[in-house]
Structures are given as C-alpha cells and as structure tokens.
Amino acid sequence: MLQTPTSRTQRTVRRIALGCLLAALSTAALAATPRPEVVAKGLEHPWGLAFVPDGRFLVTERPGRLRLVQADGRIGEPVAGVPAVAAQGQGGLLDVVTDSGFAKNRTLYLCYSEPGAEGGRANSTALASARLSADGTRLEGLRVLFSQRPKVASSAHFGCRIVESGNTLFLTLGDRFRHSADAQTLDNHHGKVVRVLKDGGVPPDNPLVLNPRPGALPEIWSWGHRNMQGATLGPDGQLWTHEHGPQGGDEINRPQAGQNHGWPVVSFGKHYGGFTIGDGITEKAGMQAPLHHWTPSIAPSGMAFVTSDRYGPGWKGNLMVGSLKFGYLARLTLAGNKVVAEERLLQDRGQRVRDVRQGPDGLLYVLTDSPQGELLRLVP
Image 1 (cartoon, rainbow, N blue to C red):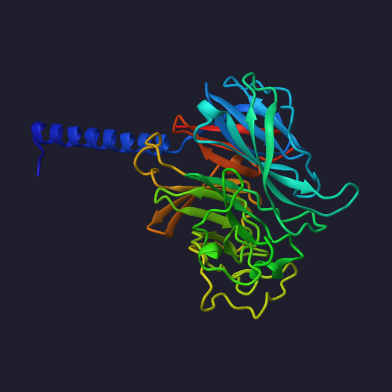
Image 2: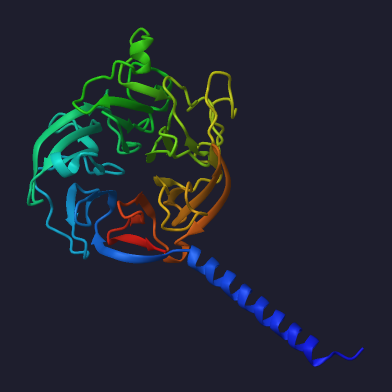
C-alpha cells in the first residue's frame, strides 16, 4: 500500500517527537546523578564535618586537629584549645556537631578518644562542648560532658557520632573490640548509645532512669551494639544509626529507648577468619533485628537523610551512607523502614568515604579519608 505524503510526514513528525522525548528523558536521568566538586583538599584523615555561617565548614582531622575551612576552600590553621586525644589506631579527634543555636551561642560539640592517666594505655570515648571564638581561631570554655566508663587499653571501636535532639545529645559508643561481651551488660558504656543533656546531666526520661536496674548506668539509651560510626535524626524525628559488623553483618538500626540490638549474641556476620559468632544465630526473642544489613561488609561511616529538594523528588527521603571498604557513597531508597534499592555513587574516585552531611544549602557534602583527604560537594 502506497503511503501518501501526509502519512509519511506524520510518521516523521512522530519519530522526531519520540526522539526528542527519549533525549529529554536521558538528559533528565543524567541530571539526576550529581557530580562531585572538590571544595577543599589536603586534610589529614578528616573524620567529622559541621557547618557554620557564611558557607564555612568545621572539619576534624583524626590526629587531633580542628580546622575552619572557608567557603572558597582555604583551610585555616588548627583551631586552638582542642582537648588532648589518644591518636592511635581508630582513635583521635572524631566527630563535630554545631549546636542548633550556633548563630547566637557559637557552641559546638566534639567527640574524641580520651586518654587516661598520664603514661597509661587506657582510653575511652568522650564528649565535650565548647564555644568557637568570634574570629574562629580557638575554642573557649571547653567542658567534658561525658566520658565512657570504664577506660580500657584499646585502639579500636570508639563509635563516636553525635546527634542533637532538642535539649539532649545522643552519642554512639563502640564495644572497644576485645570487650564485646560488655555490650550486653548495663554496668558499663561499651557497645551503647547514650543520651545526655547539653550540660552533661542525665535526662529524667532515659529508659534506665524510668525503669532502673541494679548497677545499670543511667546515661544508656540502647545497647547490644558493636561499633556505630553513623548516626542521624530521620525525617520521623527518630534516631537512626548504622554499625560495623565483623566479617559481614553491617547493620542499619533505629534504636529506641531500652532496646537490645543483640551484639554479640546475634549477628549476620562472622568473626575474622570465618569463625561463628556465639551460637551462629541471627535473631533472638527480646533482641531487635536490624532494618537492613550488608553481607559482605561495606565498612559504613557517615549517615545523612536527604530532606531538601535540590536533587529532585526521587532523592528526597533517601538515606546516604558512606563505605570505607569499597569507597563509595550509598544512596538508599526506603519504603517505610525498609531499604528497597541501593545506588552506589563516587566509586570512580577510589576514596574511602568517611562522612556525609546535608548542608544548610540543601546539598550533600562528603569527606574522604586519606592523608590527603578531600571535602566534596555533590552538585545537581
């Protein structure tokens, strides 16, 4: 059947329209993946990131330095007045968070490995508050709000993420590696989430204050954790954390008051060398199962929810988690509390991702962990 000029023209128009539509969809798909932009580089094992006015940043360096980074990427001299740290193994100056009222009170919070008595090898995780001087060169009024008990001789599993929630602070604490059994007992702070007031006091509605147990420490919020290096408040206003498993079994959790998360009784991982943990079980009555787990381990660090519209509607509500082991930023799509999809970003950079935060501008910022670490901005 012969085609009329009109029908051929219509088919050509439809083909052109379809091609334009496909090109537009392809462009939109490409635009949905942000590109990394280097804000600053040359940071020595940066660990924690916080935001201060005028587009500036506070960055901790694990050896024990706090740096003020200008909006144009210039890295300042170390801020004076930082507490002494036990800079060994995984320890050092770790997390930093600015108070929600920073613009008025200039208060920030630091988490770090606190050395014990002079000459001793024992150390623990500590939380301190201080004010950043008006010129940004020093800390003033440093005050230790909390110190993990007991101190032990270990250079691993400090945890050390801080989350502000109203007038309280959540702090994640590792099990100190060889003291994993402590995570199941309440007379110590190993393998716990603790919750304290901003002045270091104990909130009267903490679970072990409302329902005391013999010997239990009142700062404890939840227990049965291994080594939590990611924590944030979710859009639901609740605390979310993730933690390193051993060989496999990295977990995402939503710790509630008085919950037992099972370590080292239950785990999806195995000991290094492939040995079974405990009885080799992954669930037990009275112990909270993780919302999600990675096996094999990705070695997660840093955690943030996307709450802005800067990356389009498909990103809002996503959970971002860094991977140290494989050097990527995981973009996790959630359905309620369940992870239903994972996209891996920044893999081509080949850098360990230590921290991820959403800035006041709604964009995501990433720290990479190396002797020449970088601060990256993800640009839509």
